Length: 70
Image (cartoon, rainbow, N blue to C red; front, side):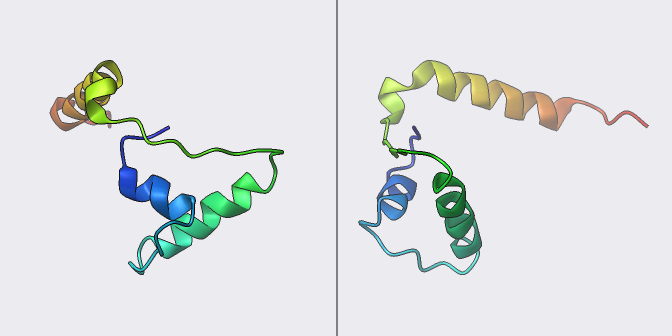
């Protein structure tokens, strides 16, 4: 489940993956999916995923403001 409609359509092979930086990641995901009996990639619109989106944003904000431990 992801809020990236593009990623879901690429992983479901509706859209072709053309960006050279994305191709190795696409191949890696498909290779991992082989190990499972069934894999479904689902698009969840952001407006239906507000809690998870908020949690991710909070984690990203914390990473930007925290000082590294030496």
